[in-house]
Length: 163
Image 1 (cartoon, rainbow, N blue to C red):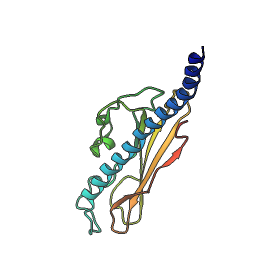
Image 2: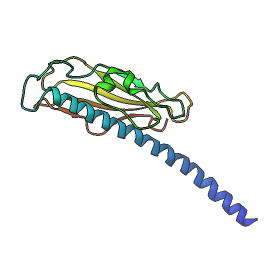
Image 3: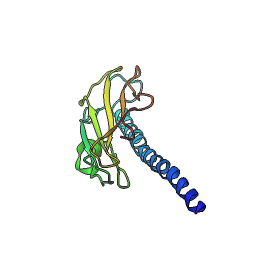
Image 4: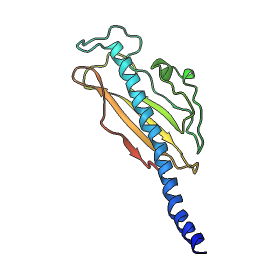
């Protein structure tokens, strides 16, 4: 009997820790994908504004328009986004290789001819990991620096990371 009691106590301690750990591990998707989204946007911006120039080479799309969230915010299950269906995500060449637990959103000032020191983007990951209707938010802001190169805020703004 004492072995069963000890195993039961260990399970009672381990299971909540495991659930918490696995939920925290799933939040790493949001921070990784936001970093990738920012890098795609920075490459897109540099293509339009080479460092050291005050005007763009072309005027086709200096910053993409607002978009998302893609996929629609999943409720407790992973979803497969159709990145090609959205001109902003596809314009950045952004895609993921699999199912995602967060919906990704671009909030943008849009347009061209942005100068140094402007706030240009906010990239967001919105998720409902446990399907209860409460969402978490991870966000990274980006703007142009004094050299007119796209820079991001350090770290992430986070609301209710584990819901």
